[in-house]
Image (cartoon, rainbow, N blue to C red; front, side, top):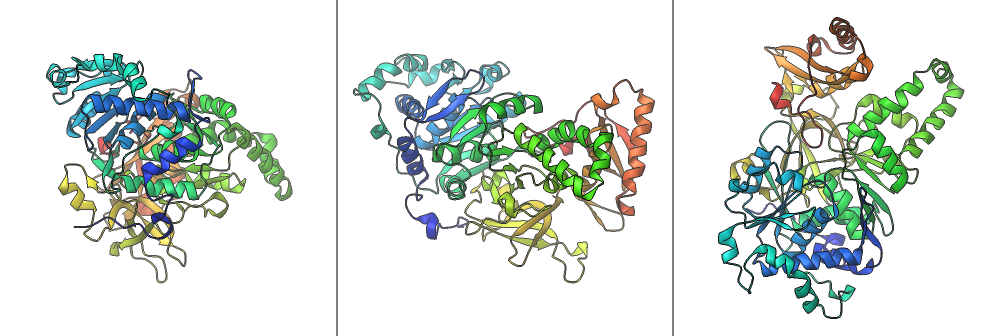
Length: 580
């Protein structure tokens, strides 16, 4: 069965015909330029030093008997050694298995074992939560903080050979061996990576879905290449541009556009490595002044609520905004403040990973803030659709990537589209970015990947405009609720309205025997010293107001107050399946 597309046209021609050639050329061309900076320490690696550390790790793999196709697990928060390990693995021919640092120890253990990893590179804090005896197949564990071996299996050490009795001894002797291999010092001409067929698996990326068990998405070198080449040709990053990487690189979105594309172009990447609170991010953005900002909706929504809402709620501004001529001046002032808060040097903000709150999107569009919303999924490594901000259509998720991806709608007849309206249903995609399948899970692969290459995204929506390329998403297929009368209810749309009401931090719609209830975690700041009864009364008022905006079959029958935040995935989406 051949589900993989063949590259055609410009994507098949040099210099973009091989992902590893792209990196070899980039590292050589940008040898003296800064590649990675650790925001916490301020230490910077040039592209030359970065390539040298990759070569050292290649030597370590070689001495310890790592073979092409072996799995290397990587667990920890973003730091330079994390990036070196990822890039060294794929440029050696090994398969990297990035594990999100926010996975529970039980989930991380399962993923590492399920992936058949032979080595684990891990942060000290994450390793302290794991048990060595739970990993019978691991040969050794290396700290990405100290770069020292923190665990090695005795049986694996016996098979090392070459005069080494332990993996720790290999690390200690690595500098001597490296100098022997490169007696004249490591230079740009020493950068050399193997020729590997583009169909070979490069990454197994375990999803962090909201609806259940994590699956290992197999992405080939060509899957990665397609995303990278699109980023290069679109000039999302370019030589000398700056990136602030604050999304987890273990997630496909951050991996592709905060690491893989920047490193292919000569961009200077600053690794944030902290919890991205609005206050810390604004400070970091003003220091780094990124040329492009990659973020998830939660970041923009929090900044909107904490920075913009208090501003436009002031009585002195509310009357000005009601005057048609004066409101433009106020919007320009707000836009300027927001642009400066994001560093003031960026071309655009690309929002992805989840739907952007409609109220926030409408306001940002009204003030001409340079943002766009893209659409993707781990199974596409991740990009499906994107449009530069000047051509972005509000409420859409951009246009399907030309010459790379195609999309269609698996029509849902129960939606009863009006005559002439775009068909609604599950969005299906096919193209160069689509994964090979799920690792060791043929049943799950068959469930989403058709014989002719069409992938079931699980998202409900339409594909509009005369060319059929602009994507509009209604909600997740798995979260859609079917009412007693057969109407389709998209809980995300109801939650977007309720989350904009006062005193709400986050909320979730649940269906109980055909009746909709809203679970709400109140906002600790705005509720202040309010009593439980006062909070309940305020949320009940919200319920009644929101119901006036909804169709009868969508209306909320009651509100239940949650004592703490909802459990979330590492990209901050609520794990819905826990609250059914």
